[in-house]
Image (cartoon, rainbow, N blue to C red; front, side, top):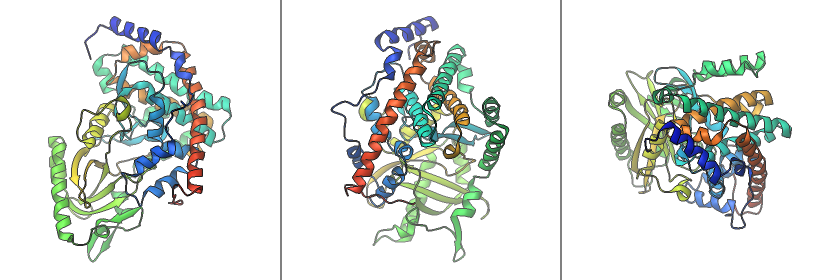
Length: 464
C-alpha cells in the first residue's frame, strides 16, 4: 500500500462512495446467467473423498442455516456480481457466525477471534461483512425471530463493525496490530444485553472450552490396542490409517513416510516451535470428518506423545484446496494452498496456534495435495447459536462485527474504509436489506438441494 497521508486516505474512501454508493450494497437479485447452485456443489464434490460427499449433503440438508454454512462457493459467485468499493483487505471468504469462537493464545489466554480460514484471500472487505450479516439473518429465521428482531441483530453487528473501523482508523499502526479480544471483554459486552442467567451460561461455556484440549481428545479419541495407544475407529467419521492403506502397501512403509512428512512440515514453523514439535514422537494417524462445508476434503488427526504416554499432542491436518474466491478475485500469490491459509490466518488473527504450518504431500492414491496443520483442540469453544435468544444474538453480532473490523484493519486501508462507511447508518441499513434478500435466495437454494436429493440427482447421508 502506498504511504498516503491520512487526509489522502480519507479522500480515497469518500471518492469510493461516488463510484459505489453505500446504499447500492442493499440490492440483490439473481442474474439470468446465475450458475446452478447444485452444479457448483457437484463441482466441489468431484475433488473430494467421494464416499464422504453424501455426508456433506446430509449435513447441509438439516436446515437453510446449515446449507448456508456449506455454500461458500455459491455465495462467492453471487457476491462477484454485487457492487464493490474498490477497497480490499485480507478477507476470510467464509465469515459466517459459526466461524467465530474462543481458543487459547500461546500465552494461555482465552481469546475470541475468527477461527476458519480455508477460503482466505485478499479481496473486497464488503464480502466478509455481507456473509457475516446474512448468516445472522438466516440464523434468526432458524430461531423463529420476528423480522424486526432479525433486522436489529444484523444492524447491530454492522454498526459495530463501522464503529470499530473508525476507532482503528484513528489508532496508531502498532495499536491496531496489538488489538485483541480476551474473553473477559466479551463478558463485559454481554452485561448490556444478556440476563444474569445468560451471562452465567456464557461463563460456563468459556470454562468448558478450557477443558477442550489434547488431554480431553486423548481420553475421548484413543484407546490401547495390544499395549499401544491407538486412535479409535468410528467410520465414516474416524478411520485409522491402517484401514485405508491400499493393497500392496505395507504398514511399516506408510508409518515411515508419515514420520518423514511430519519432520518436513516442521520447517514451516517458527524456529522455537520446531524445537517444541521435535520433543513429540509420532504414534498414530486417522482420517476425521470435520465441519459442514469441509466435509469430503481430506482431514487427518495425528497423535503425538511427549515425555510419556500422558503427554499427548493432537495435530489436525486439513486439506487446503483453491479458495472459492480465486476464480473471482484472482489467483493466490502462494503456490501452496496450505501456505495461503496459514499466511491469511496469521494476518487476520490476533494470535495463532503454536503449531500452525503447512505441507504438500503425495497421498496414498498418488495425488499431490496441500495441507495446513494446527492443534486439533486448544481450549476451543463456540457459541450455542441453536439456543440463542434474540437479545443474546444481538450482543454476539456486535462481538463478531468488532472482531471482523479488527481483522480487516490489519491489512486493509482502515482509514479509507472508515471514510467510506461514514458516520451515518446508511451502510448498516443497506447490508440489512441485502441480508434479508439473500436469506430468501438461500432458502430457494436449500430447496433446490432437497429436490436434487429427492430426485436422485444427489445422494445424501443423514444422521452423522
